[in-house]
Length: 499
Image 1 (spheres, rainbow, N blue to C red):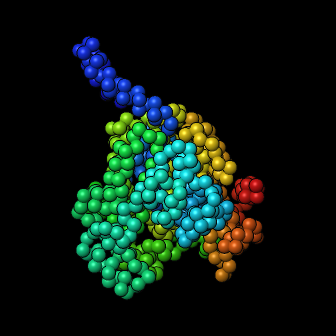
Image 2 (cartoon, rainbow, N blue to C red; image 1 turned 180 degrees about the vertical axis):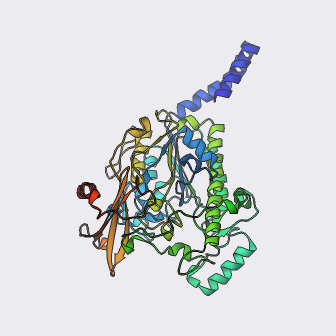
Image 3 (tube, helix red, strand yellow; image 1 turned 120 degrees about the vertical axis):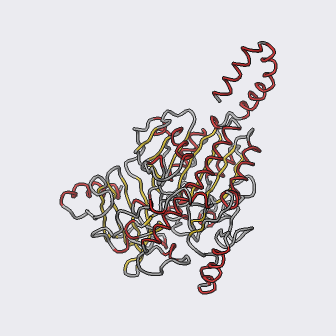
């Protein structure tokens, strides 16, 4: 924008009235567009399984220049947490604005509209308030969920199997052959093959690239309308498939393994996970630990996928700038939960630990004051719905259980809550338990409660507790809940949990 203004000023000085006359049509068009775009647009970028493993989060060995660019122009949330560390529930919570216990969605098998047929979802609310709402890629966990929330049919290249991709997005003959052999041996694993692939292909050959092409087309179509464009990127979800050029950006010998590949001392057994999601892929041990060489390959693939989707984010940002929409569009980027890369001897998400519940979260909101900053204010993904309503000046639906983060966007030192709450269901001695994690700036306190959440039971007895002090124990090596020096800390969290 600044360069355009400078060029106009130069022309006006050099050509006088002729230059002004030549510019009048363009200025008139810009004014007409501005009049039609007085409402704030929303570009809503959802990234599957994205932990804060990015340059803007201080992880300098990961290449993420475009998300870093977005963070420099917006506000980066250091302490952002999902409501439950698995795709279906966390997306359902964000898009409905209610917590998993309210929706009853604790697994991947329940669509939002089945659990809450009358709820006003985030896209539907924007649609009902005059926005054109578009869904591209993975937004809801279920591709057919919430059709009434979208102005047009959701577009989801790579809904497996589809098009040129085989199984879960494979392109190489080797990966496809391994998938076919594996699927014959284990029919229940249909579509799954190796846990990673590096095909020597252009970016748009994989589903994320194809989806971004569609998003760019939609931005051009919608440039003169108020829009809510939801762009869902699959990677870095398994399998870690990305064009070879992104793998080549990292040297295998530079890949480091997790610093804490062990179970926390005194943690209850059901706090852990056997990482069954990863074990479902070809070449991954069905039992026992992940060998170091394989672990390095998996981490390498995860990094390659991050850099691949970072390029996709860059294409979206560049198009917004080219269309002169960047200053009239709220851009929000969030990973639906974290992902363990060998921490606690585990992989995937599915726990209440830091690496599973903490995720990347950046908001660029034109007109707010926290541009280029970072905040340690606790944030939850259930806060996104009211925040976007606030920024777009829309009424806030009554069912929302989060808080608007606009005060934090204007003052990164502010806070709208004391803790972020995550939860995860487990089984203990054959009976259901629910773990609730309360994350403050320094501590994570977890209560495991005996209750049948599957039947909507609201209360139950506390069967175990965990406490982690990130100031003294950032790697979560010891459950400190029974140590005398933390007695008052535990009592404080007990009051919060009952509150």
